[in-house]
Image 1: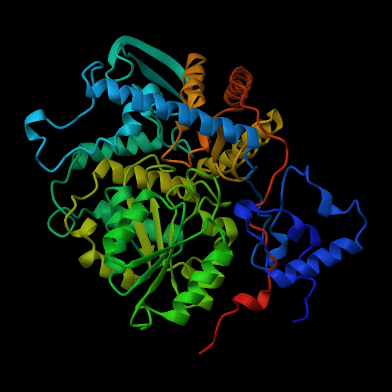
Image 2: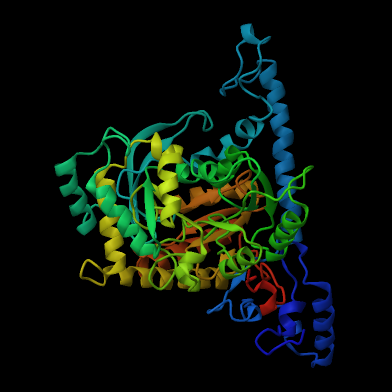
Amino acid sequence: MTESPTTKPSSWEVCHGVKNGLTADRGCLVKSLHRCNEWHPNNRCHLAEQEEVNVASQYGTLYNRPFVESFEETPMLVAVLTYMGYGILTIFGYLRDFLRHWKIEKCHIAREKEEQKDFVPLYQDFENFYTRNLYMRIRDSWNRPICSVPGAKMDLLEQASHDFNWTFEYTGRIVQDVINLGSYNYLGFAENTGPCADSAAEVTMKYGVGVASTRQEIGNLEKHEEMEKLVARFLGVESAMAFGMGFATNSMNIPALVGKGCLILSDELNHTSLVLGARLSGSTIRVFKHNNMQSLEKLLRDAIVHGQPRTHRPWKKILIVVEGIYSMEGSIVRLPEVIALKKRYRAYLYLDEAHSIGALGPRGRGVVDYFGVDSHDVDVMMGTFTKSFGAAGGYIAGKQELIEYLRSHSHSAVYATSMSPPVVEQIITSMKCIMGEDGTTIGCERVRQLAENTVYFRKRLRKMGFIIYGNKDSPVIPMMLYMPAKIGAFGREMLKRNIGVVVVGFPATPIIESRARFCISAAHTKDMLDRALSVISEVGDLLQLKYSRRRMQPSLVRPFDNNMYEDIDD
């Protein structure tokens, strides 16, 4: 077809390298390379040092804003040293296991009793190898108890270990005013003062803390009904229902929606709750590369053409499962493209907005608001109240028929105890604040402040020379550490300087992609962020973490044809 000015991709967008070795379609790539050869040698095809890659313009009218994501390639020397580090740890781990086997070294981890050696093993020694020999070395970087509100600053209860992190004891000392860069308190509503706390206290005095029953029996309060109507109005959908646990919202509702004879297409970086729900459903699961629309479209085409294995009958349902913000990568789903593919191939879309609801979009309505798409184009909208709203639980929203079906078929709705009344009131008050229905502009100001803090923090970290993953607007900011020894060292050095951070390593991430994950909040002031940035730079110099070579790559580069995803009329 003839390329129009709006669909014709610029040559540099196609010539740039892409993550995971992905390339554009062969024909388009050849044409684009031909165009590059016609350009001057100093054209944008040769801007290898460009810091930001804007891959939005190539998608025609699907995007109403620039879509900027960066995933800098791991330096080869760093990758080699990281593998060597894990190799050395593994060798010493096997040596220590040998010493434990012959009772030379004491083993503290759970293991089979000698008199039960002929039984089927309850504990898998090999599977616990990582826990025994690698995780225990840096265990002090996790499970730190806090003794205050997890706001912009928090107080930590100091703990110490005298047996190399196998057990801990509290010293009685409180580490005060630690800048909190680890909690998901995106809008700062996790607080013990203000209208949310006051309203929750009033509701506690009226209803108590627990309901002691399920929603279907005598645990359905008018507050629950009010909350669900408010959530539906907030999201712009027909109906919604709430659940007491965010993890169970995914793991217990996906099996109610799909089953045997259905196909689930899941992003490779989806959260464990989505993975568990998909496995429990009994559906066939196929995984597509992260945020890669070519991979997703290929799976959709194969599903339509070939149908079910052996019988080749059409799939009963095809469900695409994605997240709004991916909590380890800091990337944002390419929702307009996913919706276009979903419409073209008549699939259903399940969108998990656990991290994006409240944290993205000009009105804080999540990734749907961020891209300006129609909420009715998402069949199942899921989110949690545990992050931006400072509460607990999750929700499913969509059409009235969907919600009525889940009320009687979801295990999480039928068998779980109702949400606590003060938690419900926290959700109602914070959501009304975001919507501006409390008569103030506090909610809008917090959404705006979060966006400003996110852009500022990301920009400063990248200028310092750190490798930062994800989208420029994502409040989840992964900073790459790579080497196993630096995981624990970074967390400890930051805490020494009164900065609380979360560090993540294998198996939660790929083995050579250990990282620190910063979560930015609207409650952070510029002084707090500047203080944290100064400490991060100091520790980065100490541990030699400034790996960046200023060569950013887009997560996906692909020419776009507006007619490719057009709706199919009956």
